[in-house]
Length: 57
Image (cartoon, rainbow, N blue to C red; front, top):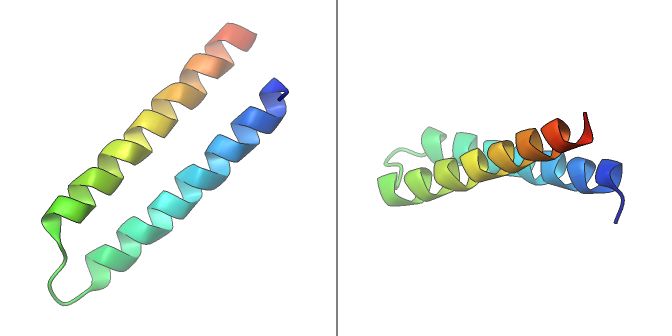
């Protein structure tokens, strides 16, 4: 898998997580455990994208 393909895949997963976080947050009684898990997963993806970009530079 090329670097660009990997980064695009990570961006798509990051955007999907962002949408899931928004959906959960809009519920009448959001599940805080789910929100925290999704936010941590989103942060890990962001960190991986930044790491890949820094290695490519």
